[in-house]
Length: 304
Image (cartoon, rainbow, N blue to C red):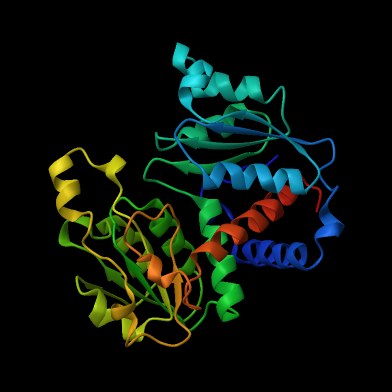
């Protein structure tokens, strides 16, 4: 019995296998439509989510399984003071696999110690979001054919953005990757990520506050929103929330095959005018997330 709490729980070989399975699901959906018949996924979402929760649920339904769970802490026994460990142990009696989102970092890990069934971290605070990273990796693979030799720009909230931290962790294990970090001074990538991931893996990186200056060199542009829920001070949020807004004018000097990504939800950091641009890949990410979650559940349930 195995859980996935951090993308680093997966080796490069395992990630490559998940990508292979996901691509096969895309090409041969009927082959997988009953593979989880009789299996139950529990979605334990202690903080709001639309895409991630529905993606997990759609993934299990398309594999022929069933879903139970809750979408906010108030509708669970957590509202009565029940611990994460007790919730996980209880739900482990009803389901075959758990997808958990929680505002406290480390909560899915605690659940994995007590559930008795596989637990997938669907996002814990500002810490990890491994299945979003898997969606991101499948998107890059399908758009670029691989990972080596790419220059990847991360723009916006690099301090609190768990999707950014997770994807940097994953990309750092591939060869010939270059990273460009674009953010306000107040939202720079944490020093521990630079030290423990980029420097440790000898990944070349630059930091800048200028999006337009950075765009021409990028193969991938990963936009993020400034997250109101991660701020303690409303004034700081309001001052920084519109730091970077991607519009057609800023793409004038971008590569013709630039891949524009965003973990969503979008607020206004990408103009809707870009949605029809062939370089916009953020809705493809949503679909790719479903396929990678299907592949991951099949592996954790030891069906494949």
